[in-house]
Image (cartoon, rainbow over all chains, first blue to last red; front, side, top):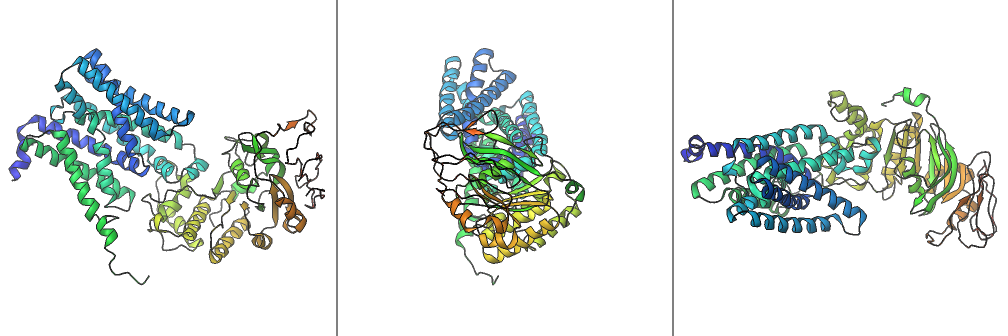
Length: 288
Length: 310
């Protein structure tokens, strides 16, 4: 049993690299995901993750499977869609969710079209679902670098980001850091989605941000605890998914997301804060 | 309590100079002039739609003037001379956030702790003191989402106390608040007044204003009267404030300022907001004309001349 847990990592370098990649994604994805959830932007994150695809696809069509070109292309495309959706929401009658949904549908279709024209179905699967088991050293360094930048930036932006979501009116009266902090947050988001893209593909990239965060909501009343739990959930789910993928020979990305999904489903029912069980188990009330 | 007298010592007045504030070029506060002296305890009263909240938004710099200007203590963005603390009418606080009452109140320390400043034991004590001041001792660990309306308002007052600002603006702080809470929070406001802070509060309870606020601005887009409370809240002034219309008129002509500083209107139009220059102080020249329903002019006593249409 224990052998099944450790042997794959002892035996295979690609499993160790996958584990390191997941560690990086989990550490930076958890706090970002919690902020996304608290700001009711989980779907925005999902939309943005698809918006990355045409950028990476164009880079792939022009330069082939080049890590740096695809990363830059993805970052530029994600950033452009983010800005465009924001500008359109302010200048037209459409709300931001509608513009973002339109953009990401178009982006997804465009990306799939470009990749199909240039490459094979195998390449397309790589774009859509990633390949955490095929992370090379350069990709791993990129993912770890993005995670490091994210954690350092969040340390600086944390207070204004939380305050801007909690009580934006108050923050405006005492500081002008709200808007720059939010902009920085969106850049970090796109960066992490690009990192997630390499490991999980465009369709699942947001998984390490959203699922651990919403799971943690059922286990903590306090923001710091929520971030910590989200990180642990991301790490545990990633590890479990990786092992299942190894032993059962199933695709790694979906296995990890499904593992996170199981933890989420269990938490919805039995978590101590606001779960089905906690809400319906009235119990005896206190005198005061 | 947390007095830093240095900042308040030489605090300048808040000066409103022919101030017009509004939305889409429609005035909600119209040609308002006057001064709020340091340490003043001023109530702003008037019917709904009178521009009270708009005035507060102008004072905190969220709304740029359509005309005129705010100078002195709260001059525009970047030129503000003193810090201010503000409790909005509808606080935009997201109560689903997983933060405690302690966290919420500790936000008041932002200007001293900023992005990174460590949160020390003295800060914890200061938060506890502020909570005690508003009667919320023991609520530190409660999630903000579990507070009642009155408790949340107490917490916001604690946060204002912690901000230790020379100017405090309160927009309808007592709407939907029970009497006991109003009494407690009124005590807090009087404490701020004793400490020499400038307090401006938008209020609807005239009895409360008469009992506690030495100065009152009665407005209905323009100032109806501004001065000592007893002389402002007269039956005639109140009747005139109620005659104001709330609807914006999209066909209303533009309000023009003639080169000599007076206000000239195209003749023959029938828009129904009046123009006056009541500043509650010395001058108060008057530019009413036929068709104005509420043209008034302020005077030091707040006893504006009555108008046939008012």
